[in-house]
Image (cartoon, rainbow, N blue to C red):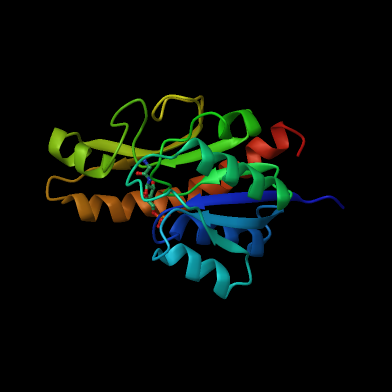
Length: 195
Ligand code: GAR
């Protein structure tokens, strides 16, 4: 049987990568993770992936703090293709994906974002929600396009914001929702594409 192969791009702790892997192991997501790529050599996601036998490599961003250079995107696309990736999942990846990577995986790049988009795009959406004083936020899985958190929404889950929430307490509850929503949405989208 041909199996859906996922490529994961992350920059941080990798808890969403772990949730995807747990869904695979638990049998609710029929897939394998072919490769994990990360722009930060110190990030826990790399160690986490390697410990579980997954190929995990660093993306060389040539010293740029935020920019995802064209060369780095080309190299990323090459590695994803080499690993046989059908679908790319951004999981806490902190650089904006543009062409040529978007062109290499049209409508096949997903992102998890910690707000109910279109509200609070960009960085630290949990802090934006607390500072705005909203009583409800949530998490979104969407397709990645050339904008910032603007692609087609594939799934959302609401999370209440409490009066005594700090950015950190809200973020940890948002993450619980992310870990449910992301694997479930990947499975649904893959079956929609017959992958
Ligand atoms: C997640 O909460 C994810 O939604 C967020 O980074 C965290 C990564 O955690 N992503 C963004 O803010 C993207 N704009 P993880 O490394 O433990 O999965």
